[in-house]
Image (cartoon, rainbow, N blue to C red):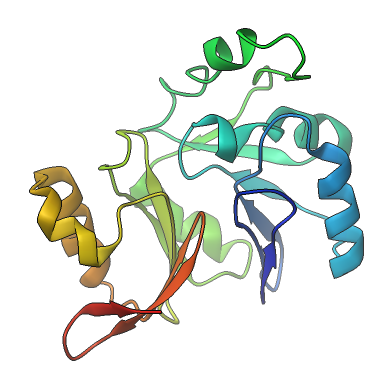
Length: 199
């Protein structure tokens, strides 16, 4: 089961497996009360793990708050571990923002280990390293064809960017037979015949 959590500017997603659940991304610092309202509205009572698609302020702003207040474990992919404090300096520039930096010991796993990790939650899928928007960007791809890609540049604009990292990330994603892409700020369907995106 997948639920969209939109309580600010970023699309966050809740994936419930047979044995556990994962929240993908959060919103800006200061949105914790909005987050609580949204999960209550959606009937979400527990979250086991939090996965951040990339460590930019609008995707990880209340990550530590959720960990501290709900007992959620933070998953950090090994390709992300050097980036988790990158937003700290951005939030530090504005003392009006109530931001808590990551200070918990995360569960660090590799992309190769991700399928087994997700299977333990009763979720069929895997986590891929998909750099392009940022070097720490990852995507969670479910076996049913749904991909959660954060802010990866969409397939239509990727060719015009002439960026090898973006091209390689899309080749990797498309090799997993994806049919729906859930971005951090919109969703699109893939036309499998042309490999183009349709709204």
